[in-house]
Length: 478
Image (cartoon, rainbow, N blue to C red):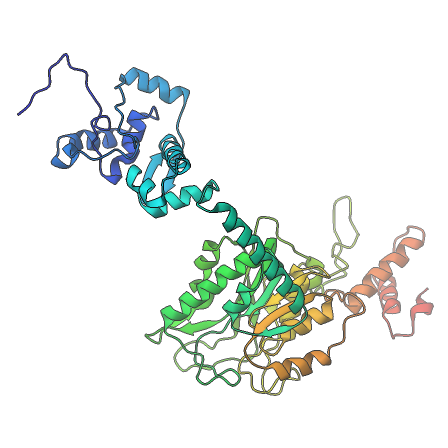
């Protein structure tokens, strides 16, 4: 066995060209790159590793691609360095390396690329993969033929913008992924849609039922979600109504739970989970009847657009007053209605519903689509429904004064006929304002016109009755 002389300087494993296992990279970076002093368990693991055969193998260090020796430093110097210049740590999946080490590797990659080496030659030189090299060059805009790549990207975006301008106000007959591929990045203000549930429904003139293998369906929807996130503008919203599906083992799977992590993985921020309650639904034998479906609301950013007055509901007690404090006796309710909640009781479109379109097995209610459009967009915004179906979202946009674009493979005639009968709203409808609400606030305004004096409950009731439209007692009450 070879022994080291006491007078010989001690070298670190990295200086001798030893490459520890991936689990010890963090400890090595901390100890030999001037970072925070390693914890005792990590230090013991590194010391134990030095005596193993794997630790003695002559592999190039990932922290020093050139293989140059690094002089050892005393523990006091390491402590002083850790106090003066603490390191940041970069998470690279299953390995963690110091920011100094990452910067060293990136500088080496950029230098080799500037010298004219190819991706593979650069990867061989630093001991990494071509994909690793390409990611660094992509991040720094130093890829091979970078100018040509940027020129082609700009040309593609111009084509996409021209296509979008040409199809605004229409529903394109196309596959959903082909439709999204024709849209530029950051081009949509809102997405309102109801995705297919993959439960065997037959849509339009499709040759077979809408049923895929569960993993195939999940992967396909992941692509759709990714395209939704790409095409939304910053701080734009997505309202996606989802129900339940069944997997290959015929087990019920809620789609809002299945796709939740996929939406977050696409870079969207969760806002709300809307519960759409229905009066009719499935009547199973061995479980509870289904009387609701969910809709997930997402934002591409941290500043969501939200118009509360567009979805307010009438107050239950609009005449409620403050009973103490500086505003004692004043009305406490908002004249525009109660603040909207995440429970929406909306009638389902069944066979005898006036909105029912022939041939569609799962039609979207107009009230649901219009409430989402009014809540999360402004007049003139561009709203998209990639699963247009019978044109419910398009009709809601036409009534609310929003631009629309969508796609579907079937129901062209149904959509055309339906949109031809749509009449745009001449005023902005506020659903939370009721006749009782108006009467209460009109009476309050009348009370403030007269000198302040005590008023009895009977007199207040007379004022309320006089303010109600159609009672014929308004002048008498005055």
